[in-house]
Length: 368
Image (cartoon, rainbow, N blue to C red; front, top):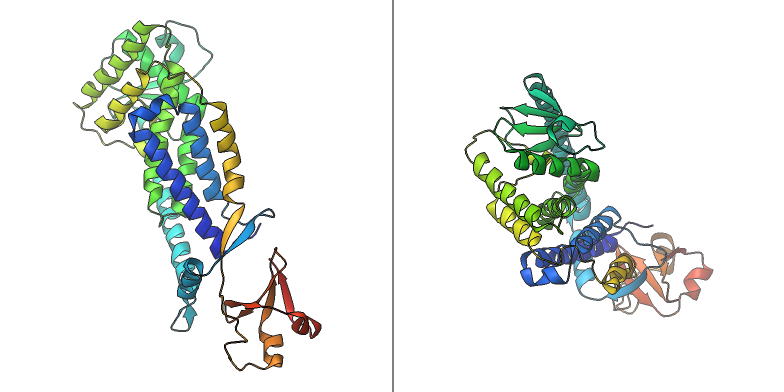
């Protein structure tokens, strides 16, 4: 695996397109019947995989770009006070990561202290005592005035409830929902996403990706908790979402939902989307097999071709006047995978018809 400007550019380009596609599926209701929960989850995995592996692989083929990539490379090689621009940009990138990471660690520590404060002043119940059915879980339920919404906070496998009166049906729906978040390890997923957002803090689509993943996690939980064969229970679950939202609007407690898995999101549009999604009759239908196969192949297809900067004019023909000795000592040949050669001089690559003379005199050769 090799990291380069081209591999980073390819990663951002493909990830941006996939994030746009994901958002397109989520905002167009007509696409519900074509793309289901499994498709959304797999698409998210593809995006995250791309962002985690911005490299060239052994099967990657280079596609020469005479304009786009050459312009970008010329730009980042510009020197500012004696330093190439790309070094300055990487330095800013690294400093940003450190700053955001420190803030994130401090926030996690604060949330852990806040969690301890909650359980010290909360009523504690066993989840089995609150549900009519026997379940395989030893999770505790804490009821506190400090809690703004039903949630699972941090890495703690406990369910937090606000000090509000719920009827038995609402309580069961809430507990099953939060318990499913624990089983799905959604808190861990959110933390991993937050770390990825810290690495790509300067990449605008990351904010949209985080928002969409949060919605998909809720949809996945809804689809597993609800019994779609029982229409009465289905409608009861949707009524719970609405009724709990109404009750929570009466509270004025700060929430920490970015680091929690919650039954209710602050945005009414998200709640409306979840209800509409639940009421679709084909929510349990799986995505077509051909689409799943395409998604599995997508990472390999998108990494099979990489745009590389290419300077078309032959440097030697342009009469730069460099001696052969200077070229041998200060330049290098690039042996492309298609068998052709290029001469790399001062960060720019030019075409070379016959490299045999330079090779015979011992010029450094770099395999692509």
